[in-house]
Amino acid sequence: MIELTQIRKAFNQGQPNEFWALNGIDLAIEAKKVTAFRGPSGSGKTTLLTIVGCLARPTSGRVKLAGDDISGLPERFLTDIRRSTFGFVFQQFNLIKGLSALDNVMLPAFPTGRPHRELRERSESLLDRLKLAHRREARVEWLSGGEQQRVAIARALVNDPKVLIADEPTANLDTALSREFMGILESLNAEGRTVILSSHDPLVVESAAVDCVVSMRDGQLTRD
Amino acid sequence: MNAWIEKQRHLIDFTLASLARRRTKNFGLLLVYTLLVFVLASVALYTHALRQEAAQVLKQSPEIILQRMVAGRHDLIPPGYIEKIGRIRGVQAIEGRLWGYYYDPVVKANYTFMAPAAEAVRPGTLTVGPAVARSRGLAPGNTISFRAYSGKLFSFTVAGVLPHSSELVSADLVLMSEADFRAFFAYPAGHHTDIALSVANPLEVRNVAAKLAAVLPDSRPILREEVLRTYASVFDWREGIVLALLSAAIFAFAILAWEKASGLSAEEKREIGILKAIGWETGDIIKMKLWEGGLISFTAFLVGFIAAYVQVFRFGAPLFEPVLKGWSVLYPRFELVPAIDSLQVATLFFFTVFPYMAAVLVPIWRAAITDPDAAMRS
Image (tube, rainbow over all chains, first blue to last red; front, side, top):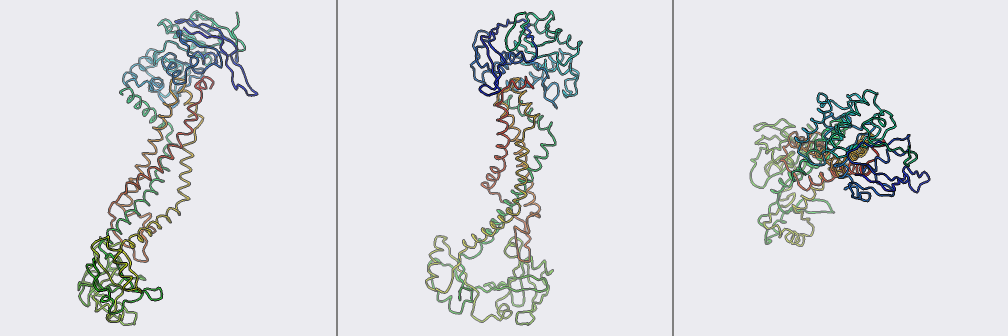
């Protein structure tokens, strides 16, 4: 579904502090599977996720989504693809403080211009499914870490994306909450969604829910 | 089209929620901004209404006033001048006028004494301006005495008080009969203060003035339009003085508003990054911030302008009245007729709302074009 060919990504290119975060990545990510990127800090996992999820463009190389080359598309089209194809769960959850859980879930769908009632019903059903119906009007800063992550998952799903991307999803969770998260991932995968995540947590990468583990070090893929 | 409307609705919903989240900052901004618009709109509305009022009142005055000059100073019109003018084509009426100033030591104020041409005031009686009536507590039927410059005391009966509608220019007026006027000021018989000419066709006024200057080279014709222009420039000057005096405060307000509007907090920048990451376009974020800026600035403009309108036309502009209206000692008291100049409103709107929108837009645009992957790294 997603093919990466000779992906390289530089930061501060041409400056004295130039840094190559990714250095020649060739990878094919299968649809409807759970793929995990594993590696130490600074190995390039997050950078690779940003390129896969159209949050950033590679410095060189090609990204193909369902056979279409999207690496050279202008920002506007990339945003369109990002909004309709990918849902993101960030390490720090990145919820908007001061807004309710429900408002946060609805946010990614605002630019689509979907009718308000339909959007609200969809968001409420997602919160209900993630056992947060009773907290939907609560401001997100009042929620626990686990609840915040479930709000972040609901937000990632509001536009019904085919691919869910999670960056270090269990980094801020205890073991019980981490297991709960993996359970949610499994159910989403069972619905036919592709899940791509980065982690160095053995609980995640060694989970039975993960179909494929990609190991990384120094911006390159390594063989295990 | 429906999707576009829904999208704008979502953006406005989010904008309102954002404004409510930063309640203190936004309320402070709204307050400062409203005050700024209020001050500027008050001055603009008041001076415009004054100009209108003056123009309205002066509509009744003669088209040309002829004054005799001696050594560059205004002098009395000697007998025979009116006859010298003779018949000039276009002049409907010629009338010698009698008026002068009188200092009343009781209230320490100057009055304008005048003898109207028509026998409107009977000998021994006066018709007084509203401010004179107020300051001396006069009502029709009262008797009042004035000591003439000669030292002689004259007593008059008040026959009436002039209407409020013309108070801006008649506040200090005292009308008396010609005989009383000449006796009171020891005015030489046959002399006049100036000559008033009525000209029916406004296009003829300048020609008539040129003919007058030719017939009476020692005289100066003063046109009504010149008087109007003088009034206008006096009010403009006063408006300028007020704005100059207030400029420091206005600048301070404006800088504060600019600072508040253009400063993006780290939290706001973080939120913009998040919105971009979850699928908002740069344009959506700019639109959202434009709605935010628009809501604040338009509300401030509306509230400030309405408050200024109420202050000027309902309460008589107590904040700026003394300096804008101006009068030697006797302050005219009158109800201003609401007059709004659409160009003035548009100018005020342009100079208050647009800079604010620019102040909001530039930093947002800078923040909105940052890469969406920043959210992943925060």
